[in-house]
Every structure is written in structure tokens, then in C-alpha cells.
Image (cartoon, rainbow, N blue to C red; front, side, top):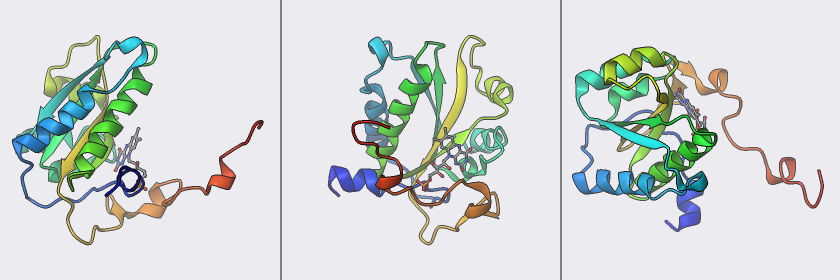
Length: 174
Ligand SMILES: Cc1cc2nc3c(=O)[nH]c(=O)nc-3n(C[C@H](O)[C@H](O)[C@H](O)COP(=O)(O)O)c2cc1C
């Protein structure tokens, strides 16, 4: 895939095979996160890598739409410092990791950790840091079910495709 194809073909993968990510692949994913640029280069992130099945299962109970974590090979929980642009910065780091993974055929999906204090206790995260999201990684199961938590995607998501450019690009002025 070209870089453009890697970007435009990246879709959420919520169902995974049991194939393991190699240490080399996982390291490249983490390096892609590490090399992300951030506001004033403050790098307001830590990455907790989880591969233990019991912890993955427990983490999958920490969000309302987080069951995909239990089937993932690896979860990366993004821990962020409370800096002004932290959410923008961790979004960039997350996308870099997801694209680096996808470039190697590894699928991924974000989970919002709605029950953050439960996740904090599970992972021993200090009180002065936030853990808004997790990213599940694994090789995609063929024929992905088109459901989220057992419900059709259309019932859960605002849109299952993307708005056309004409609806979102403004030239010169609004
Ligand atoms: C901040 C954020 C939180 C998300 N939380 C969840 C989640 O809790 N569970 C889930 O299955 N997907 C979650 N997603 C994935 C979105 O549903 C997905 O990016 C969107 O539907 C587009 O998917 P597509 O690329 O397959 O079209 C989240 C994405 C973002 C950016």
C-alpha cells in the first residue's frame, strides 16, 4: 500500500484472530507513537502495553463499547499528562500507531474508557494523569461482523462512511 492507501483504507477492526504480533512489529508500533510531534514537543504521553489475557478481559469492562479489547492480541492504553494540547497530541500519537500497525496488516480499534477510575485501579495509574482511551491491536478476523457490542453499526455510529469533500471543505472562506 502507498501511504495514501494506508491512510484511506484504515478502518476500525474490532474482531481479531489469535495470531500474535511479533516483538518487532509491536516495537515499530510503539516507535511510531514515540516519534509523534506534540505541542512544544512536550510528549505528554505514556503507553501501557497489555498482553495478559486476564488484564485484557478486565479492561474490556472499563468502557461501554470496549468488548473488542478482550479479543485483542495487545492493548495499548494511552496515559496522558494534563497539558493544554494533550488530547490533540495523544490523538496524533494514536493515529501514528494505528497507521504503523495497518501498514503491516495489523488492525486496530480505539475504546473509550468510560469507567476511567476502574481502569486506573486495574493498571495502577497515578491520579494526576488521565487514561481516556485504549487501542486494541491484532490481525483482522476475515469477514468482520458489522456489529458493535452485538448491535448493528448503524445504530451506534453517526455515520458508517465519510462525508464527501464537498460537504466539509471550504475554499477561501466559510
Ligand atoms: C476518541 C475515540 C473514541 C472511540 N471509542 C470507541 C469505543 O469506545 N468503541 C469502539 O468500538 N470504537 C470506538 N472508536 C472508534 C470509532 O467508532 C471509529 O473511529 C469510527 O466509527 C470510524 O470507524 P471506521 O474507520 O471503521 O469507519 C473511537 C474512536 C475515537 C476517535
